[in-house]
Length: 359
Image 1 (cartoon, rainbow, N blue to C red):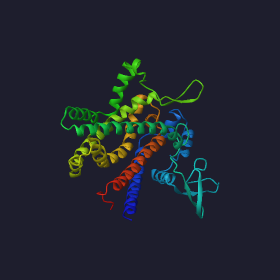
Image 2: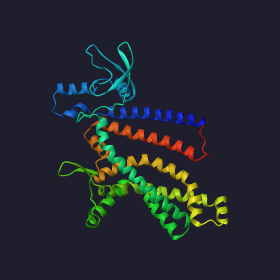
Image 3: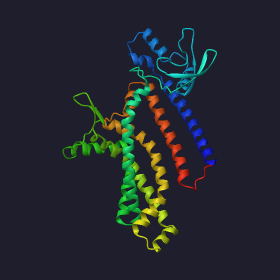
Image 4: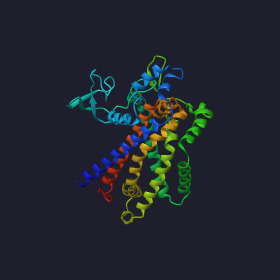
């Protein structure tokens, strides 16, 4: 019962955070002194064309009306109202598929998938634009975290069992250097060294996407283009997981039950990995799950450096072309992932560590 209350509280907190993010993002991109309709059509567009675009994207409405309609589009349970011409005034028939729950007068309460709007430039659904790019970014983020988890835990354990030795000092120096390096700087450095100067030996490219079209028009996956972005994105998590694992291992190795296990004559392997590492993994696991969401934001810069066609590169290109619906949708998607991962981390921590209160 306490766990259910804990989960409910976290979900409500997450919902409030998302509401705040939606309001902030909407106001940020709707108070800018930029005529989005004119930027879409070009500076030489006539007034009638600009007015048509403003009606299509609701830019002719006051900002508070557009904010209310934006919330209505994003909400899974929304209001839909038909006018005399049998066209909607709340939802767009040609863009939103919904199922009506009940009707009060001319207004219906409907259930639907959240609608992020459509692109200024291509008129495509924002969800479709982002859906084509999220796969590559997901592969990049997950592979970077897997690399960081494996290397970080191994280095952290080695530093802990070799405390104050050469290996411990060397690992601490390298991890401190890794924490201090911005991901985009690491990306530029790796691209220059391994993708340019050592390209004849590494076979890696300075720039390249994970997926591309071959001469037959088929989509092919180029896994070698994943290596440099993955390493660049994983450097900071490697350093942090290393230091966290070392600290947790040192704390556990000083516990009485570890001394008892050694006194019983258990092997070094069993003491270190079966007893010490297992009990030291609680903060490490929660850190890894939390960092997965943070890695997505770092992917924005890495994708730009390597021309890696994912969610980050799409967002930056859309921002440069003033395609604000795509940018807003991307930011909201990343914010949603952050909120979900934080809730998951809190719940996971409460389950694996009985010392954490679920009140």
